[in-house]
Length: 555
Image 1 (tube, rainbow, N blue to C red):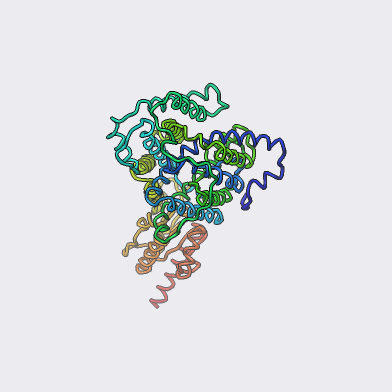
Image 2: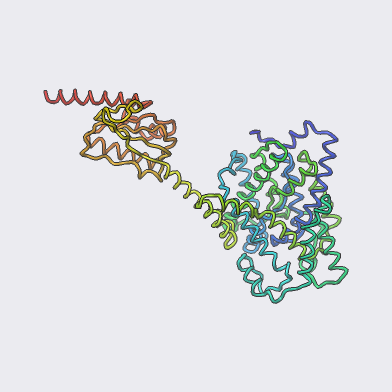
């Protein structure tokens, strides 16, 4: 699974007509589910409706064909909506294309550098926090269309949108609210009546018919956007240093979010089908798919958990299902796209409300708040608030920084440097205690010794009556340069006080640091002993050497 080989090639080795039949049926059903979602997510992202389909067609096809998962379905997802809308507002479509292409290049490099396991380095509290935050931003962003409000301005930031909703609540359109409410009722209850036909498709058909036949004063997609059924065309943006510099942080955000979303989706799919995906190949496919999507008019794409789960539930067994889903959407684009103009905007808002609810993971948030340590709760809440109030770039940066600081504090808290308790002969139960010569002091070091714990390295008392210090390091898995500096300082203080330093049971990584720094050679190989017994024997030997030197000096 470490080879960079698309899952499609592996699946075709044992492919059959029966499997193709399953993939065909599943691909068609998933396309029906993806159709209204792709349009809704495009509108939420501040781009035209057909660009959502371009994304599902191009990125969906390429990611399925080149990816490392058997059943992953890719396309536009809610996670990118606010990011894309912000980029378009600040830098225009050329800025979005540039950012997405750069993100695609970053994803390909991540795959080639075998960074497919990077997801394990993103704390659970951060992914939970920003996912819930994105859900809230989507909900707030759709209140205008759901309520039929008339804004004075066209706000971009979430809090500005919320302010406009509060300020302009008096302009509510009750016809729009009724259409949105009808769509929500269908979305919530339809699957209980007929799970085979997607609720979102029924909501679109029913509300479009209601607005058309009853002549309701409700905005439709056609009232606000120009609908095009044209095939996607290649568009290379005008690159400049200024544009690249402006969108580079957004490109990294898109790449990281695409990696997290796609690998999470692939992991969920693995659990459902009992398989294992190739994470590095998946990242490369995500990079290629996003680059092509951007160059042909699409927006960022990633693995979509809900559509992937629908693919599995409807019998999809190979990447062919994802490719079929894209081909079906291409036919819809060419043949049926003009009819999308009839879809009411409140219905689109209702669909996105459901998307936001499903992705919010509020039950997970409640469970974490109830059971997690306070520091983890702080990371989750801060990430959530920053996502809503500012943006995902700030939220991830601050959340990761805080999580790293808290982790380092925890590691520092478990790192301990303690001197052994010495028991006099005949005192207590000495049968289980190790005998330590009177001239020796032993310090036990436990936990990783890094800059956060370096201050725990003790100082040597110049008036000490001991002449050998044993540092027992069997429980030290890692040592960094800051802690090494502290140990060098201790060795210097011991040298000045006439105290020998002996290291006991130094593990592989700390030993490599000692050797590379020159401290190993400086102290001498004999000062590094494999265990405490050998270290105590070396301490007795050093005592004899000192006695001989003192006798020789006196004579």
